Length: 542
Image 1: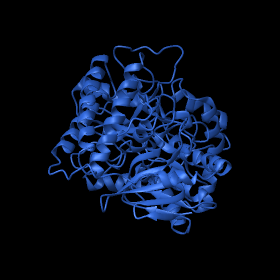
Image 2: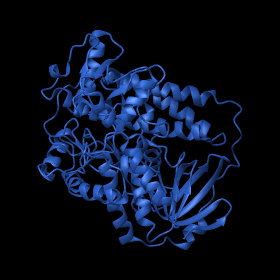
Image 3: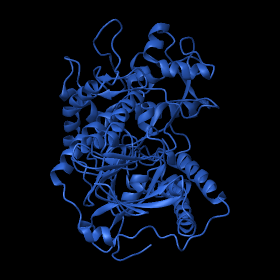
Image 4: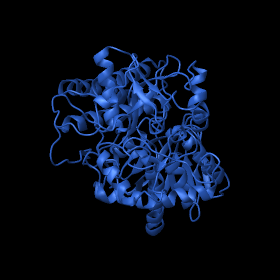
Protein backbone atom coordinates (compact mmCIF):
# COMPACT_ATOMS: atom_id res chain seq x y z
CA UNK A 1 0.00 0.00 0.00
CA UNK A 2 1.08 3.62 -0.51
CA UNK A 3 2.26 5.27 2.67
CA UNK A 4 4.07 8.54 3.32
CA UNK A 5 6.74 7.99 5.96
CA UNK A 6 8.25 11.48 5.67
CA UNK A 7 7.70 14.44 3.39
CA UNK A 8 10.41 13.09 1.09
CA UNK A 9 10.01 9.32 1.58
CA UNK A 10 7.09 7.28 0.21
CA UNK A 11 6.46 3.54 0.28
CA UNK A 12 4.40 1.49 -2.17
CA UNK A 13 3.96 -2.08 -3.38
CA UNK A 14 5.21 -1.57 -6.94
CA UNK A 15 7.14 1.31 -8.52
CA UNK A 16 6.87 1.53 -12.33
CA UNK A 17 9.13 4.08 -13.99
CA UNK A 18 7.86 4.89 -17.47
CA UNK A 19 4.42 5.54 -18.96
CA UNK A 20 4.62 4.02 -22.44
CA UNK A 21 2.60 1.06 -23.65
CA UNK A 22 4.69 -1.46 -21.68
CA UNK A 23 4.55 0.47 -18.41
CA UNK A 24 0.85 1.33 -18.64
CA UNK A 25 -0.11 -2.24 -19.58
CA UNK A 26 1.79 -3.68 -16.61
CA UNK A 27 0.37 -1.07 -14.22
CA UNK A 28 -3.21 -1.99 -15.19
CA UNK A 29 -2.53 -5.68 -14.61
CA UNK A 30 -0.73 -5.27 -11.27
CA UNK A 31 -3.31 -2.79 -9.97
CA UNK A 32 -5.76 -5.69 -9.61
CA UNK A 33 -3.69 -6.86 -6.63
CA UNK A 34 -1.25 -4.13 -5.56
CA UNK A 35 -0.79 -0.40 -4.97
CA UNK A 36 1.20 1.16 -7.81
CA UNK A 37 3.18 4.38 -8.19
CA UNK A 38 3.61 5.16 -11.89
CA UNK A 39 6.30 7.73 -12.70
CA UNK A 40 5.95 9.70 -15.95
CA UNK A 41 8.94 11.81 -16.95
CA UNK A 42 6.78 14.37 -18.74
CA UNK A 43 3.02 14.18 -19.27
CA UNK A 44 1.59 10.68 -19.13
CA UNK A 45 1.19 10.65 -22.91
CA UNK A 46 4.69 11.83 -23.87
CA UNK A 47 7.11 9.13 -25.02
CA UNK A 48 7.99 6.99 -28.02
CA UNK A 49 4.76 4.97 -27.78
CA UNK A 50 2.79 8.12 -28.56
CA UNK A 51 4.57 8.45 -31.91
CA UNK A 52 4.41 4.80 -33.00
CA UNK A 53 2.64 5.03 -36.35
CA UNK A 54 2.91 1.62 -37.97
CA UNK A 55 1.20 -0.94 -35.76
CA UNK A 56 1.59 -4.26 -33.95
CA UNK A 57 2.84 -7.45 -35.57
CA UNK A 58 0.77 -10.55 -34.85
CA UNK A 59 -0.68 -13.54 -36.67
CA UNK A 60 -4.25 -12.53 -37.52
CA UNK A 61 -4.45 -13.67 -41.15
CA UNK A 62 -5.55 -17.32 -41.66
CA UNK A 63 -2.87 -17.65 -44.36
CA UNK A 64 -0.15 -16.50 -41.95
CA UNK A 65 1.46 -18.58 -39.18
CA UNK A 66 3.43 -18.22 -35.95
CA UNK A 67 6.30 -20.13 -37.57
CA UNK A 68 6.40 -17.61 -40.42
CA UNK A 69 6.48 -14.70 -37.95
CA UNK A 70 9.33 -16.42 -36.09
CA UNK A 71 11.25 -17.01 -39.31
CA UNK A 72 10.89 -13.37 -40.43
CA UNK A 73 12.01 -12.06 -37.02
CA UNK A 74 15.09 -14.30 -36.87
CA UNK A 75 16.05 -13.41 -40.43
CA UNK A 76 15.81 -9.69 -39.71
CA UNK A 77 17.78 -10.17 -36.49
CA UNK A 78 20.85 -11.29 -38.49
CA UNK A 79 21.63 -14.38 -36.45
CA UNK A 80 21.51 -12.85 -32.97
CA UNK A 81 17.88 -13.37 -31.94
CA UNK A 82 17.21 -15.52 -28.90
CA UNK A 83 14.85 -18.12 -30.36
CA UNK A 84 12.96 -18.70 -27.11
CA UNK A 85 12.19 -14.96 -26.87
CA UNK A 86 11.10 -14.81 -30.51
CA UNK A 87 8.79 -17.78 -30.07
CA UNK A 88 7.18 -16.48 -26.89
CA UNK A 89 6.41 -13.11 -28.50
CA UNK A 90 5.13 -14.59 -31.77
CA UNK A 91 2.93 -17.06 -29.89
CA UNK A 92 1.44 -14.46 -27.53
CA UNK A 93 1.21 -11.34 -29.72
CA UNK A 94 -2.20 -12.28 -31.15
CA UNK A 95 -3.73 -12.70 -27.69
CA UNK A 96 -2.31 -9.34 -26.61
CA UNK A 97 -3.85 -7.70 -29.69
CA UNK A 98 -7.23 -9.32 -29.03
CA UNK A 99 -7.19 -7.89 -25.50
CA UNK A 100 -6.61 -4.42 -26.91
CA UNK A 101 -9.51 -4.92 -29.32
CA UNK A 102 -11.69 -5.92 -26.37
CA UNK A 103 -10.58 -2.78 -24.51
CA UNK A 104 -11.81 -0.70 -27.44
CA UNK A 105 -8.68 0.33 -29.34
CA UNK A 106 -10.02 1.61 -32.70
CA UNK A 107 -7.94 -0.49 -35.09
CA UNK A 108 -8.51 0.27 -38.77
CA UNK A 109 -10.83 -1.88 -40.85
CA UNK A 110 -10.95 -2.51 -44.54
CA UNK A 111 -12.99 -0.04 -46.56
CA UNK A 112 -16.68 -1.04 -46.41
CA UNK A 113 -15.85 -4.11 -44.31
CA UNK A 114 -15.82 -5.21 -40.65
CA UNK A 115 -12.55 -7.08 -41.15
CA UNK A 116 -9.42 -5.47 -39.75
CA UNK A 117 -7.01 -4.01 -42.27
CA UNK A 118 -3.61 -5.67 -42.02
CA UNK A 119 -0.60 -4.10 -43.67
CA UNK A 120 2.81 -5.45 -44.61
CA UNK A 121 6.12 -3.86 -43.71
CA UNK A 122 9.77 -4.43 -44.58
CA UNK A 123 11.05 -7.89 -43.67
CA UNK A 124 7.58 -9.44 -43.23
CA UNK A 125 6.46 -12.21 -45.56
CA UNK A 126 2.74 -11.71 -44.80
CA UNK A 127 0.30 -8.95 -43.98
CA UNK A 128 0.32 -9.13 -40.17
CA UNK A 129 0.47 -5.52 -38.97
CA UNK A 130 -2.74 -4.39 -37.30
CA UNK A 131 -2.93 -0.62 -36.96
CA UNK A 132 -5.11 2.36 -36.13
CA UNK A 133 -4.62 4.37 -39.32
CA UNK A 134 -1.12 5.84 -38.91
CA UNK A 135 -1.48 6.76 -35.22
CA UNK A 136 -1.50 3.31 -33.60
CA UNK A 137 0.57 4.21 -30.54
CA UNK A 138 -1.51 7.29 -29.79
CA UNK A 139 -4.77 5.31 -30.03
CA UNK A 140 -3.51 2.51 -27.77
CA UNK A 141 -2.17 4.99 -25.21
CA UNK A 142 -5.50 6.83 -25.06
CA UNK A 143 -7.34 3.57 -24.38
CA UNK A 144 -4.88 2.49 -21.67
CA UNK A 145 -4.78 5.91 -20.00
CA UNK A 146 -8.60 6.00 -19.78
CA UNK A 147 -8.41 2.68 -17.91
CA UNK A 148 -5.53 3.91 -15.71
CA UNK A 149 -7.51 6.96 -14.59
CA UNK A 150 -10.32 4.67 -13.45
CA UNK A 151 -8.02 2.61 -11.21
CA UNK A 152 -7.94 3.54 -7.53
CA UNK A 153 -4.73 1.57 -7.01
CA UNK A 154 -2.55 3.61 -9.38
CA UNK A 155 -0.95 6.86 -8.22
CA UNK A 156 0.47 8.77 -11.21
CA UNK A 157 3.41 11.14 -10.75
CA UNK A 158 3.75 13.24 -13.91
CA UNK A 159 6.70 15.59 -14.52
CA UNK A 160 8.90 13.37 -12.33
CA UNK A 161 12.27 11.99 -13.45
CA UNK A 162 14.22 9.10 -11.98
CA UNK A 163 17.66 9.89 -10.54
CA UNK A 164 18.97 6.51 -9.38
CA UNK A 165 17.81 3.13 -8.13
CA UNK A 166 18.02 2.31 -4.43
CA UNK A 167 19.90 -0.85 -3.44
CA UNK A 168 22.44 -2.01 -0.84
CA UNK A 169 25.80 -0.96 -2.26
CA UNK A 170 27.73 -2.99 0.33
CA UNK A 171 26.53 -6.36 -0.96
CA UNK A 172 27.77 -8.37 -3.96
CA UNK A 173 25.54 -7.95 -7.02
CA UNK A 174 23.98 -11.39 -6.64
CA UNK A 175 22.78 -10.57 -3.12
CA UNK A 176 21.58 -7.05 -3.80
CA UNK A 177 17.93 -6.03 -3.89
CA UNK A 178 16.43 -3.04 -5.63
CA UNK A 179 14.05 -1.41 -3.15
CA UNK A 180 12.89 1.61 -5.13
CA UNK A 181 14.32 4.80 -6.55
CA UNK A 182 15.16 8.45 -5.97
CA UNK A 183 12.81 10.57 -8.10
CA UNK A 184 13.15 14.26 -9.01
CA UNK A 185 9.97 16.34 -8.93
CA UNK A 186 10.65 18.57 -11.95
CA UNK A 187 8.15 21.19 -10.75
CA UNK A 188 9.84 21.76 -7.36
CA UNK A 189 13.35 20.35 -8.06
CA UNK A 190 12.97 18.27 -4.88
CA UNK A 191 14.03 14.61 -4.78
CA UNK A 192 11.51 12.11 -3.42
CA UNK A 193 12.64 8.71 -2.14
CA UNK A 194 10.18 5.98 -3.14
CA UNK A 195 10.55 2.61 -1.41
CA UNK A 196 8.92 -0.29 -3.28
CA UNK A 197 8.79 -4.05 -2.93
CA UNK A 198 9.39 -4.36 -6.68
CA UNK A 199 10.61 -1.83 -9.23
CA UNK A 200 10.00 -1.94 -12.98
CA UNK A 201 11.93 0.07 -15.55
CA UNK A 202 9.86 0.87 -18.64
CA UNK A 203 11.77 3.99 -19.58
CA UNK A 204 12.22 3.50 -23.33
CA UNK A 205 15.35 3.77 -25.45
CA UNK A 206 18.34 6.06 -25.88
CA UNK A 207 18.11 7.43 -29.43
CA UNK A 208 18.32 11.01 -28.15
CA UNK A 209 22.07 10.48 -27.89
CA UNK A 210 22.09 11.07 -31.67
CA UNK A 211 21.82 14.47 -33.33
CA UNK A 212 18.98 13.39 -35.64
CA UNK A 213 16.31 11.13 -34.22
CA UNK A 214 12.65 10.29 -34.68
CA UNK A 215 12.30 10.00 -30.90
CA UNK A 216 10.83 12.56 -28.47
CA UNK A 217 13.00 14.41 -25.96
CA UNK A 218 12.27 11.81 -23.27
CA UNK A 219 14.33 9.04 -24.96
CA UNK A 220 17.55 9.63 -23.02
CA UNK A 221 18.39 6.09 -21.86
CA UNK A 222 17.49 6.76 -18.22
CA UNK A 223 16.60 3.19 -17.28
CA UNK A 224 19.63 1.70 -19.02
CA UNK A 225 22.00 4.15 -17.30
CA UNK A 226 20.46 3.61 -13.85
CA UNK A 227 20.55 -0.16 -14.25
CA UNK A 228 24.21 0.01 -15.35
CA UNK A 229 25.15 2.06 -12.30
CA UNK A 230 23.43 -0.53 -10.11
CA UNK A 231 25.44 -3.37 -11.64
CA UNK A 232 22.96 -4.78 -14.16
CA UNK A 233 24.15 -6.50 -17.32
CA UNK A 234 23.66 -4.45 -20.51
CA UNK A 235 23.56 -6.28 -23.85
CA UNK A 236 23.87 -5.47 -27.59
CA UNK A 237 23.96 -1.68 -27.29
CA UNK A 238 25.90 -1.36 -30.55
CA UNK A 239 22.67 -2.13 -32.41
CA UNK A 240 20.83 1.19 -32.65
CA UNK A 241 18.24 1.10 -35.40
CA UNK A 242 18.12 4.03 -37.77
CA UNK A 243 14.69 4.42 -39.28
CA UNK A 244 15.20 4.89 -43.04
CA UNK A 245 12.53 7.53 -43.54
CA UNK A 246 12.29 10.59 -41.33
CA UNK A 247 10.85 13.78 -42.83
CA UNK A 248 13.59 16.09 -44.14
CA UNK A 249 12.33 19.61 -43.60
CA UNK A 250 14.04 22.62 -41.96
CA UNK A 251 11.11 23.19 -39.58
CA UNK A 252 10.15 19.58 -38.84
CA UNK A 253 13.19 17.33 -38.36
CA UNK A 254 11.81 14.63 -36.03
CA UNK A 255 8.66 13.46 -37.80
CA UNK A 256 8.69 9.78 -38.69
CA UNK A 257 7.32 8.57 -42.02
CA UNK A 258 6.04 5.09 -41.23
CA UNK A 259 7.37 2.02 -42.98
CA UNK A 260 3.77 1.15 -43.74
CA UNK A 261 3.93 3.55 -46.71
CA UNK A 262 6.45 1.25 -48.37
CA UNK A 263 4.28 -1.68 -47.33
CA UNK A 264 1.46 -0.12 -49.31
CA UNK A 265 3.55 0.56 -52.41
CA UNK A 266 5.60 3.70 -51.77
CA UNK A 267 9.02 3.68 -53.47
CA UNK A 268 12.30 5.42 -52.66
CA UNK A 269 13.75 7.64 -55.38
CA UNK A 270 16.71 9.88 -56.07
CA UNK A 271 16.06 13.58 -56.88
CA UNK A 272 16.19 12.56 -60.55
CA UNK A 273 13.20 10.28 -60.01
CA UNK A 274 15.25 7.07 -60.38
CA UNK A 275 14.29 4.21 -58.06
CA UNK A 276 17.37 2.74 -56.37
CA UNK A 277 16.49 0.10 -53.77
CA UNK A 278 16.52 -2.73 -56.34
CA UNK A 279 20.27 -2.02 -56.73
CA UNK A 280 20.84 -2.86 -53.04
CA UNK A 281 18.51 -5.76 -52.24
CA UNK A 282 16.23 -8.20 -54.09
CA UNK A 283 13.36 -7.14 -51.81
CA UNK A 284 13.85 -3.55 -52.98
CA UNK A 285 11.72 -1.13 -50.94
CA UNK A 286 10.50 -3.92 -48.65
CA UNK A 287 13.97 -4.84 -47.41
CA UNK A 288 14.55 -4.66 -43.61
CA UNK A 289 15.33 -1.29 -42.06
CA UNK A 290 19.07 -1.76 -41.63
CA UNK A 291 19.52 -2.47 -45.34
CA UNK A 292 17.28 0.42 -46.43
CA UNK A 293 18.97 2.89 -44.06
CA UNK A 294 22.45 1.93 -45.33
CA UNK A 295 21.26 2.13 -48.93
CA UNK A 296 19.93 5.66 -48.42
CA UNK A 297 23.13 6.67 -46.62
CA UNK A 298 25.19 5.26 -49.52
CA UNK A 299 23.14 7.06 -52.20
CA UNK A 300 23.25 10.37 -50.33
CA UNK A 301 27.04 10.21 -50.03
CA UNK A 302 27.51 8.95 -53.58
CA UNK A 303 25.45 11.74 -55.17
CA UNK A 304 26.23 14.47 -52.61
CA UNK A 305 22.55 15.02 -51.84
CA UNK A 306 20.82 16.07 -48.61
CA UNK A 307 17.94 13.60 -48.83
CA UNK A 308 16.11 11.07 -50.99
CA UNK A 309 12.39 10.94 -51.77
CA UNK A 310 9.60 8.55 -50.78
CA UNK A 311 6.81 8.52 -53.35
CA UNK A 312 3.29 7.15 -52.85
CA UNK A 313 1.59 9.70 -55.12
CA UNK A 314 0.77 6.99 -57.68
CA UNK A 315 -1.86 5.64 -55.26
CA UNK A 316 -5.41 6.99 -55.22
CA UNK A 317 -5.89 10.16 -53.19
CA UNK A 318 -8.74 8.57 -51.20
CA UNK A 319 -6.53 5.58 -50.32
CA UNK A 320 -3.70 7.80 -49.04
CA UNK A 321 -5.97 10.01 -46.95
CA UNK A 322 -7.77 7.00 -45.46
CA UNK A 323 -4.68 5.01 -44.48
CA UNK A 324 -2.24 7.82 -43.67
CA UNK A 325 -4.22 10.81 -42.36
CA UNK A 326 -1.56 11.89 -39.83
CA UNK A 327 1.27 11.88 -42.37
CA UNK A 328 -0.91 13.56 -45.00
CA UNK A 329 -1.91 16.44 -42.70
CA UNK A 330 1.57 16.87 -41.16
CA UNK A 331 3.27 17.01 -44.55
CA UNK A 332 0.59 19.36 -45.91
CA UNK A 333 1.37 21.79 -43.06
CA UNK A 334 4.92 21.81 -44.36
CA UNK A 335 3.81 22.47 -47.94
CA UNK A 336 4.06 18.87 -49.18
CA UNK A 337 0.98 17.24 -50.70
CA UNK A 338 1.83 13.54 -50.62
CA UNK A 339 -1.04 12.71 -52.97
CA UNK A 340 0.76 14.70 -55.69
CA UNK A 341 4.48 14.74 -54.80
CA UNK A 342 7.19 12.70 -53.10
CA UNK A 343 8.26 13.18 -49.47
CA UNK A 344 11.88 14.26 -48.77
CA UNK A 345 13.32 11.78 -46.23
CA UNK A 346 16.56 10.92 -44.43
CA UNK A 347 17.49 8.17 -41.93
CA UNK A 348 17.34 9.04 -38.21
CA UNK A 349 18.13 7.22 -34.97
CA UNK A 350 14.98 5.38 -34.03
CA UNK A 351 15.14 2.32 -31.79
CA UNK A 352 17.53 0.84 -29.22
CA UNK A 353 17.69 -2.91 -29.92
CA UNK A 354 19.95 -3.61 -26.96
CA UNK A 355 19.30 -2.75 -23.34
CA UNK A 356 19.05 -4.11 -19.82
CA UNK A 357 19.53 -7.87 -19.98
CA UNK A 358 16.43 -9.73 -18.75
CA UNK A 359 15.13 -13.27 -18.70
CA UNK A 360 11.85 -14.32 -20.31
CA UNK A 361 9.79 -12.82 -17.49
CA UNK A 362 11.45 -9.41 -17.53
CA UNK A 363 13.71 -10.01 -14.51
CA UNK A 364 17.15 -8.40 -14.43
CA UNK A 365 20.17 -9.74 -12.53
CA UNK A 366 19.39 -7.29 -9.69
CA UNK A 367 16.83 -8.84 -7.35
CA UNK A 368 13.39 -7.20 -7.31
CA UNK A 369 14.16 -5.21 -10.46
CA UNK A 370 12.32 -5.83 -13.75
CA UNK A 371 12.72 -4.15 -17.14
CA UNK A 372 10.25 -4.22 -20.05
CA UNK A 373 9.79 -2.49 -23.38
CA UNK A 374 12.52 -0.74 -25.34
CA UNK A 375 14.75 -0.30 -22.28
CA UNK A 376 15.11 -4.10 -22.00
CA UNK A 377 17.11 -6.63 -23.96
CA UNK A 378 14.99 -9.79 -24.10
CA UNK A 379 16.72 -11.37 -27.11
CA UNK A 380 13.79 -10.74 -29.46
CA UNK A 381 15.43 -8.22 -31.77
CA UNK A 382 18.94 -9.58 -32.19
CA UNK A 383 21.07 -7.36 -34.42
CA UNK A 384 18.06 -5.61 -36.00
CA UNK A 385 14.40 -5.17 -35.06
CA UNK A 386 11.72 -6.41 -37.43
CA UNK A 387 9.16 -3.67 -38.03
CA UNK A 388 6.21 -3.51 -35.59
CA UNK A 389 7.65 -6.14 -33.23
CA UNK A 390 8.36 -3.52 -30.56
CA UNK A 391 4.77 -2.90 -29.47
CA UNK A 392 4.16 -6.65 -29.51
CA UNK A 393 7.19 -7.18 -27.26
CA UNK A 394 6.07 -4.50 -24.81
CA UNK A 395 2.59 -5.98 -24.49
CA UNK A 396 3.72 -9.61 -24.21
CA UNK A 397 6.46 -8.93 -21.66
CA UNK A 398 4.10 -6.77 -19.60
CA UNK A 399 1.95 -9.88 -19.20
CA UNK A 400 4.96 -12.12 -18.44
CA UNK A 401 6.35 -9.67 -15.87
CA UNK A 402 2.90 -9.37 -14.26
CA UNK A 403 2.62 -13.12 -13.84
CA UNK A 404 6.13 -13.38 -12.38
CA UNK A 405 5.76 -10.48 -9.92
CA UNK A 406 2.43 -11.87 -8.74
CA UNK A 407 4.07 -15.28 -8.26
CA UNK A 408 7.17 -13.98 -6.42
CA UNK A 409 5.60 -11.13 -4.46
CA UNK A 410 7.11 -10.74 -1.03
CA UNK A 411 7.48 -7.48 0.94
CA UNK A 412 10.95 -6.18 1.66
CA UNK A 413 12.23 -6.15 5.24
CA UNK A 414 11.00 -3.27 7.40
CA UNK A 415 14.60 -2.48 8.29
CA UNK A 416 15.24 -1.68 4.62
CA UNK A 417 12.58 1.04 4.74
CA UNK A 418 13.89 2.49 7.99
CA UNK A 419 17.53 2.44 6.92
CA UNK A 420 17.01 4.00 3.48
CA UNK A 421 18.28 7.56 3.44
CA UNK A 422 16.63 10.40 1.60
CA UNK A 423 18.59 12.22 -1.11
CA UNK A 424 21.35 14.33 0.42
CA UNK A 425 21.62 17.89 -0.98
CA UNK A 426 23.77 19.36 1.81
CA UNK A 427 26.97 19.41 -0.26
CA UNK A 428 25.67 21.01 -3.48
CA UNK A 429 24.96 24.56 -4.56
CA UNK A 430 22.85 26.25 -7.19
CA UNK A 431 24.65 26.59 -10.51
CA UNK A 432 24.75 30.16 -11.79
CA UNK A 433 25.17 29.12 -15.43
CA UNK A 434 23.99 26.22 -17.58
CA UNK A 435 26.35 26.59 -20.52
CA UNK A 436 28.31 23.42 -19.66
CA UNK A 437 25.18 21.27 -19.77
CA UNK A 438 23.93 22.69 -23.08
CA UNK A 439 27.40 22.64 -24.68
CA UNK A 440 28.19 19.07 -23.61
CA UNK A 441 24.72 17.90 -24.69
CA UNK A 442 25.26 19.31 -28.19
CA UNK A 443 28.81 17.97 -28.50
CA UNK A 444 27.83 14.48 -27.35
CA UNK A 445 25.05 14.15 -29.92
CA UNK A 446 27.27 15.41 -32.74
CA UNK A 447 30.07 13.00 -31.78
CA UNK A 448 27.62 10.09 -31.77
CA UNK A 449 26.10 11.10 -35.13
CA UNK A 450 29.43 11.67 -36.88
CA UNK A 451 31.42 8.76 -35.41
CA UNK A 452 28.92 6.11 -34.27
CA UNK A 453 26.25 6.36 -36.95
CA UNK A 454 24.98 4.12 -39.74
CA UNK A 455 28.50 3.41 -41.06
CA UNK A 456 31.42 3.15 -38.61
CA UNK A 457 35.20 2.73 -38.59
CA UNK A 458 37.63 1.65 -35.87
CA UNK A 459 39.27 5.06 -35.81
CA UNK A 460 35.96 6.94 -35.50
CA UNK A 461 34.90 4.70 -32.63
CA UNK A 462 38.18 5.23 -30.77
CA UNK A 463 37.89 8.99 -31.20
CA UNK A 464 34.29 8.91 -30.00
CA UNK A 465 35.17 6.93 -26.87
CA UNK A 466 38.02 9.30 -26.01
CA UNK A 467 35.79 12.37 -26.22
CA UNK A 468 32.80 10.79 -24.47
CA UNK A 469 34.96 9.80 -21.49
CA UNK A 470 36.03 13.42 -21.09
CA UNK A 471 32.43 14.59 -21.35
CA UNK A 472 31.28 12.01 -18.81
CA UNK A 473 33.90 13.19 -16.31
CA UNK A 474 32.83 16.82 -16.79
CA UNK A 475 29.21 15.86 -16.23
CA UNK A 476 30.11 13.74 -13.19
CA UNK A 477 31.84 16.69 -11.49
CA UNK A 478 28.89 18.93 -12.29
CA UNK A 479 26.42 16.34 -10.98
CA UNK A 480 28.07 16.13 -7.56
CA UNK A 481 28.61 19.89 -7.22
CA UNK A 482 25.28 21.47 -8.16
CA UNK A 483 21.57 21.04 -7.61
CA UNK A 484 19.82 18.59 -9.89
CA UNK A 485 17.81 19.49 -12.96
CA UNK A 486 16.16 17.28 -15.57
CA UNK A 487 18.61 18.51 -18.24
CA UNK A 488 21.59 17.53 -16.07
CA UNK A 489 20.11 14.11 -15.30
CA UNK A 490 19.43 13.44 -18.96
CA UNK A 491 22.96 14.47 -19.96
CA UNK A 492 24.40 12.25 -17.21
CA UNK A 493 22.43 9.29 -18.53
CA UNK A 494 23.18 9.98 -22.19
CA UNK A 495 26.94 10.21 -21.66
CA UNK A 496 26.84 6.92 -19.76
CA UNK A 497 24.75 5.12 -22.37
CA UNK A 498 26.78 6.58 -25.25
CA UNK A 499 29.96 5.21 -23.71
CA UNK A 500 28.34 1.77 -23.46
CA UNK A 501 27.24 1.97 -27.12
CA UNK A 502 30.75 2.84 -28.28
CA UNK A 503 32.44 0.18 -26.14
CA UNK A 504 30.00 -2.42 -27.47
CA UNK A 505 30.66 -1.29 -31.05
CA UNK A 506 34.43 -1.50 -30.54
CA UNK A 507 34.08 -5.02 -29.15
CA UNK A 508 32.25 -6.27 -32.26
CA UNK A 509 34.89 -7.11 -34.87
CA UNK A 510 32.44 -7.76 -37.70
CA UNK A 511 29.54 -6.14 -39.53
CA UNK A 512 26.13 -7.51 -38.61
CA UNK A 513 22.62 -6.10 -38.75
CA UNK A 514 22.58 -2.51 -37.58
CA UNK A 515 26.32 -2.43 -36.89
CA UNK A 516 28.35 -1.83 -40.04
CA UNK A 517 32.11 -1.22 -39.71
CA UNK A 518 34.15 -0.53 -42.84
CA UNK A 519 37.23 -2.06 -41.19
CA UNK A 520 35.35 -5.32 -40.49
CA UNK A 521 32.91 -5.66 -43.42
CA UNK A 522 32.31 -9.41 -43.16
CA UNK A 523 29.89 -11.24 -40.89
CA UNK A 524 31.29 -13.99 -38.69
CA UNK A 525 29.82 -17.47 -39.01
CA UNK A 526 28.80 -17.74 -35.36
CA UNK A 527 27.34 -14.53 -33.99
CA UNK A 528 27.52 -13.68 -30.29
CA UNK A 529 25.88 -11.02 -28.15
CA UNK A 530 27.91 -8.19 -26.64
CA UNK A 531 27.27 -8.02 -22.89
CA UNK A 532 28.88 -5.47 -20.60
CA UNK A 533 28.61 -5.08 -16.84
CA UNK A 534 30.01 -2.42 -14.56
CA UNK A 535 32.70 -3.54 -12.13
CA UNK A 536 31.23 -2.88 -8.70
CA UNK A 537 33.44 -2.48 -5.66
CA UNK A 538 31.83 -3.10 -2.29
CA UNK A 539 31.38 -0.13 0.00
CA UNK A 540 32.14 2.55 -2.59
CA UNK A 541 30.07 5.66 -1.86
CA UNK A 542 29.15 8.64 -4.03
